[in-house]
Length: 509
Image 1 (cartoon, rainbow, N blue to C red):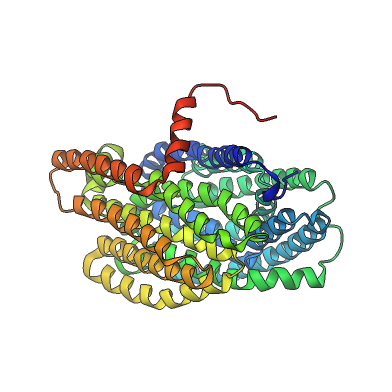
Image 2: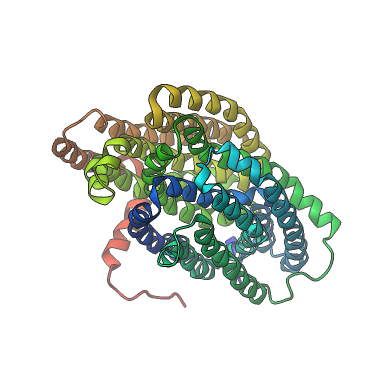
């Protein structure tokens, strides 16, 4: 059982945080390797048009989470609140009500997507020879919505209990199957609907495993009665605003490929989404970090709301240290990497797209620090309102940039939206979470300085020179980070970790 925050020693908390971060990040590295192997094979065997449609199917599977009305994130926060304040007896009715609601919402979502499928294939301008299999694929995806939604709730409960060992033991095989499943289908068929069957089967197996593990963690039957009205009101008051974010945020993340498909054709979608899939696998870093930090923030804020500045500083340092070297590598090596991986044609069309998306993802990492901080304070309404402000601005920029600069314009528009998002979220962190302006300015200086180094490399066209300058930029960033960003306690902690590498871990009595 997780003890309240105040009841653990600092060494135990550091060990627990390090262990959970390791579970969350390392547990998603294997799917990244499988994706790198499978994507070129899929492109060769099913063609760019089908592959463009498959990437949209992958996106739709992820976007189905909007039908949970924010209840998955609400379960994580509210269960973490109960654990942090010692109200363990309230967890079971909370979980029971939340999961019952999510099953009902999943059924509604399945019906909605099934009815909308014919219109969806028309909007995407699917080539006539692929219309039948594309419609079948979306009907199959509709059937998987209840499993997808229920998975978010079950995983949310386990994360509130800090059981990242369990969540990654399930999520890692599912991530492997997302890319490996289609490869298993190729010897028998290259039709999109049969490929999607493999994705749907993986979803249903994973939700069954999550259900078993969650019931063992909670210790009782998960759904015991009809949802409790008071519990539902508490969840929906938080989850309702989360729903707006769940609709608008993924929409802004994924709408670029829909506009590219409508304005430039499905082949352009493939040239855009191939580097996109590589770059956005780096989300395992931020997802791993905030999968751990969000329930930690919620538990801590339940007893001490003054911890906002410390949590914002911690999250920003972790994001910068973990993402900058990887994004720098992408900016430096995008052209030769794509040439070797998927061929010269993709390298010519997609290298600059890959670089711009990587820079945008780095900025988005900082946005997620403030986003999770605000929501852990119980202010999901703030993040939802900011997304509503950003949506029309982004749509206008995306259409304008895509029309005039093709897929490079779409990538540039997405990166600019990330800059706007980060600025608004950090501004609201000061107003809502009462983070001191000094902490905000220090974080902004870190983010802007690192981004400037990355953007400077875009103007270097010679690959060899760009790689040399990237090495210099990494050295400058590393020295500055150690000297100016980390405080004395941080440097001592890093030194202890490096000193103890390879030694057996000592467990405190």
